[in-house]
Image 1 (cartoon, one colour):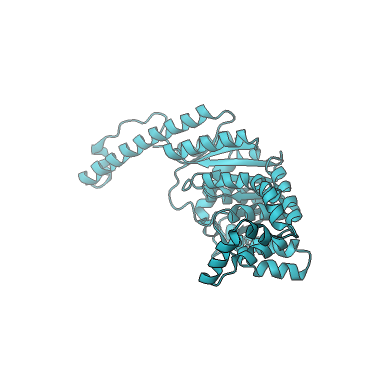
Image 2 (cartoon, helix red, strand yellow):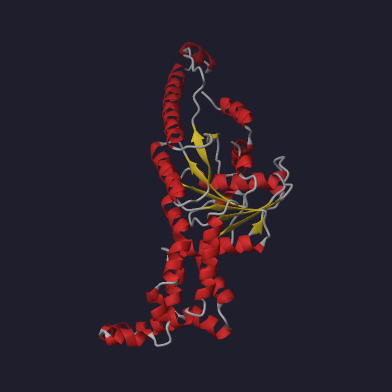
Length: 381
């Protein structure tokens, strides 16, 4: 399989996997390859620790897609027939933009933005990242500006929160508790009737914070934007399971990331999400017939330095041992996961997080099966 086959007829590709397996580089290389082939592509990272900007040779990325200048790649002999855009999710800003869009009037908008509960909710790490990612993906897809959108997610256990975000948010928005809290009769009377008012009164005296009033005001104004939230989360839920969406699971051949990839692929299938393929990065490739090496010949090649020759041979033996372990990890992956063969990307010399390394990864992703076999053989030892 090649990335070109994977993305045929697709508008959205969500890259998921364990941390430290080259997921961000893969997402950037996939978007780059599509742009090289004439697509207008946006790559978005929702991982706070992502190095997407450096992968594209940029200083930083903002909350809106910015075009990556073609000159960056033209200087390396690569022409973009399409366009490449990139952004890094800012959860707080996306939350605020959504309130600006959905609030029925200026007074309601300002009241929500100024509310103490909203400020805490919109800056919380847990939950807000996934929710705002859902909102931003909806916005990018609905804009019609891009032929394809590539999403770089946080490590896979957090990416599962991204998968579940539409359903969990809809359950919250449509839940009876929220409807009661947002009702005009007010939360204050309900809490006070159960004695909770005494607790909030004591809290107000000690801290000076009228939490009860803030909660009541927050849920009251929130009711004015509930339908807009529900519409978006429902639409993104449909988008995630749409045939035009695909999930690309990225892993390395080490035991822990392999188990994580197997777990995530199973979870995708259980959820009815469209699993598209698997990329195995940083594979150490063992030569088909690794022969013995004459230490005396190596010593001669190294100008008679026997100690350096011995250390070099020990390093080669270690690499071959790691390559055998990688091959075992690859067999475990292919044995557990039904479907096409994974896209293999070898351990590359240099920093794959830089532009040159990004181009190397793009070449492997989009190579045909025969081309990739030849390229992999060049990296075997």
